[in-house]
Image (spheres, rainbow, N blue to C red):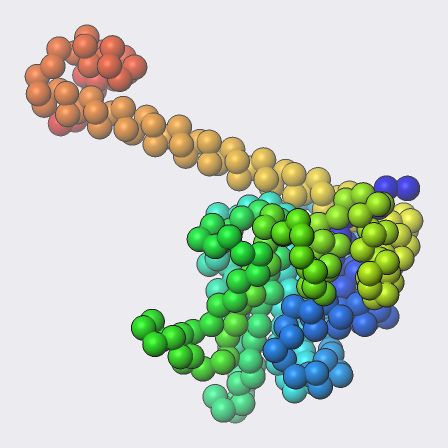
Length: 277
């Protein structure tokens, strides 16, 4: 049996978004958000814990895990294994939605509760930092005091996991990054809750329905990644063509012979003749 990889979002959702094993989610959140008071985790509510069994592999849906704490804070956990060019904008959008959805008919601004986005990525979408865990809030630009504490983002970069170092959060991130039985077993020995998560991962991997959904998700992700890479290559190709045309226009303005412009840019004589000044 090949284990599902917990960093694949469908496996992550099955593992951390299950009401029957909420202690796995609780232990991870306590490791990722140690500044939150312990009583926040005494009663966690998983928002929409159900997974649609009729999962369609032709469309990438959002498979995050959304939680409400005992005091009403909302925490959204999202995991990504392939790069999305608009990742930061997407995070900001969903964080803003978590704020606005709190106010219904007759709601008051004073009723707003803190929202936290935890983003786990297996690619480097925060190139400005070499740290594995970075935290973002609304701060004054010079004195760095907070505007308020309503919005917070935690970026967890699996690519920047240190080879050495101990800690509860590091153990969980190494578990998410793991791909071999040896890695899983070694981490399970260090934390009884990770041991439970490892056992649950084995059970999930043996379930035929889960395997079908998992394989469909992997295919959808591969197809989406290929589509994005193809679009990027096409964009680069268009950019190179536009660059050659711009050079040709400048050379034409300098009255350089068309044959030499063609030699310098790779454009045909007809293409150069068709260019507008």
